[in-house]
Length: 319
Ligand code: GLV
Image 1 (cartoon, rainbow, N blue to C red):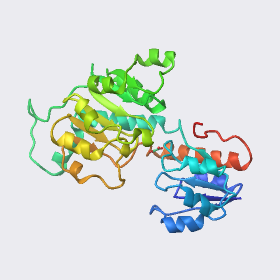
Image 2 (cartoon, rainbow, N blue to C red; image 1 turned 90 degrees about the horizontal axis):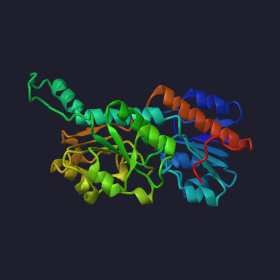
Image 3 (cartoon, rainbow, N blue to C red; image 1 turned 180 degrees about the horizontal axis):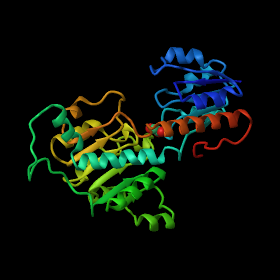
């Protein structure tokens, strides 16, 4: 059968697929163009997709009716039109679990970078601007004893909570459903409605999926509801935050700072953010370790292989 990759993935995953099927790989770090992709997917039984490529109705139709599975190499699958897949009998899988720790590391790193002004300090040294140890020089905010508000308490949210507790933070969360009692006891976390969480937290970190329901979940009113000394961290998806509203709030000192690993129009970053010292900007590095990317790609390959064998894939997207 024919498996089409929409982008370059670690060799381990390609070998797994090639052992059983014809693989049409994309061996460049340059993103595949839409027209190229539309022509390559023709006749595909499986598509291994990266989050940079949209898997929508035209792409599914270009593949043809034999297509059985779209295996996304990411936990988020907002790049995939799930309804169009369902209508065509195409299964969708993602890669939860294997990127939990790496992404929680980046969220914790952003908390430390933004509260302790680490990127700002690094910029001073690299620009060879004068500096001197000083009692009042570049003071940040201590996180010990502060409240971390987690929006979306899934696996990554819980992994961040464990890290933050080790740094002395206490945990609040908002989620559609309450977490299991054992997890709540382990994390010592309290559940709040989003408005209460925003008003209470010293750091708000976003870990919800992106969907129409979470588009601009954090916008002007939500930023206004946050404390003026609070920080916002986003390692989820860019459009969960209204970036223009955030830039305005940061410039006006309405909140203390932000740490962003994701953006509304990646790889473009809103120019209004670029000149601000109170925002840390990372180029979507959440899962970017050799180990994690290999685990993601091999899990996606295992998902595709299982479906092509007529078996249940390890990690289908939630029903
Ligand atoms: C990365 O952003 C992912 O969703 O896996």
